[in-house]
Image 1: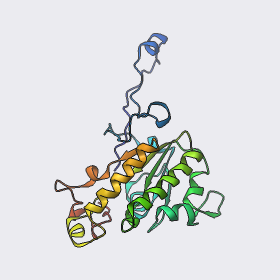
Image 2: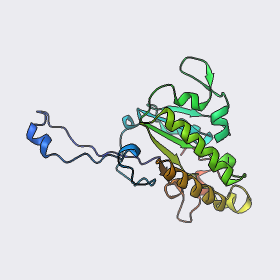
Image 3: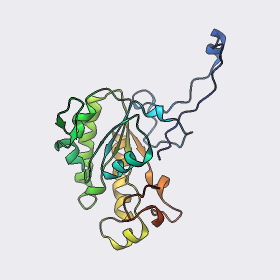
Image 4: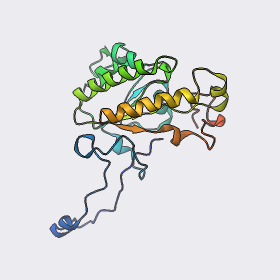
Length: 223
């Protein structure tokens, strides 16, 4: 689960006075890339309720689809498809748009203004050339930024795989994942977007996805 958080406080039933407002500190909100961008890394903050994501869209592959199914988060929009790639997100008409027609994921992201967009793509391209992937990803971000200039964009790093999967695959291994995540973080910094380190959030003490949390070494179980 993403820990993208906002502090909360109990409201005064009588309402704040003018003096209260003048003396109150600025709220501790996540920085905006457009206003006070300080780098790609997102610190761990306090949990927020689901309403925080009411202006958000999640775009990605089957891992995001699993998040949609099992997280219980329903206030946001999802643009997902199994085996989705960066190239597919920009070129494949695989989703149903609000008007009932089919379109690409990029078409979906331009239907209305969003405050936050979370992107998880890359695991299906991990067997290819990382620089080619990086250029396509950067081009995709340029398109999103042009369509949603006021939106905070979160580049989600690739998730860990299990030790068994990593040690038995020349493609789906933690070395390749680290290489791609380094590229993703670099692109996020270049484009003034945010980078979410999912390895730290989801791996066990050994740095791998716990075997108890997966059936195939890549995808997560419902629990």
